Image (cartoon, rainbow, N blue to C red):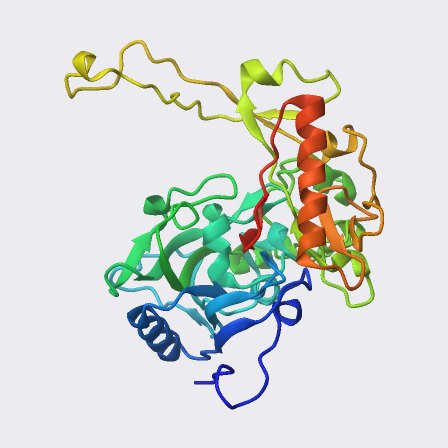
Length: 391
């Protein structure tokens, strides 16, 4: 297994391994390229007691200038396998099931499925990073989420060292979150997806069509109505164009893409709190009310539930980009003397304009948080994984 922690050569900095292009050195770097090498690397590292972290495409990770004093397992496994229908894989005639290695490039996977007329991932075109990271964040864009197509993952559990198949329903997938992001430690080895095979209908309709367009901005760009279907390749091209206009498609010639994509998640607040926002603030009601947390004195709790008088809390998603822009921070903004800036194309992205440090990225992120909190009482939460940095 390639190991850059010994005498094989100098270690790369995180600035060379992540799309934000900041960060110091890892103490040790392993680069497993096969599934078995990946399992062996993880078990050996975990058994050593060394601090460890996983790294895929580096598009959702920001590491401090001090680097990481432990072992980095850089997942380089590749491969997409189509499962044949059979026992335990009772797939309908118009569906196709794939098993994808964790290190496979996400956008390469999307391009692969679109080229073969398999719909379900097309609106997720252009998202950087690796497939194994996709269920951790439950990636989503333009009305599609990974959870729409995810069947299960193969997971190597840190606590037990045992490989498990975890069904999608057990992953507690939500808006940019999952049980994996919330503390279940381990390693995604394989991602299993089920997509719509458009081959039969394409022979009648003349084209492989996308899933129904679910996002107004995308529908507008395509010149169709929400709910319409369009050729898969057309939808992918439109998504790539929309993302590119926001600096959200990796491009060596565009410094705005030296970023971790959307740096903050859209805040989820109660309906009551959302009513304190200005009328112009965009908001999207969420369909599933959640019960609030409640502290019950021990002498009042008898071990039964649910609590009869608990009422669901209606939740609303706000636009982090709108909050940032309307807190007085414009596109291209930077702190005096800093090489970190708000993207010139999209206020939700923090960018490295050239030679920025992780500390400068952190300073700008904290400034944005402070302005939004001061203006609207909302504390924005970072979307990327921060290593050695705190906001």
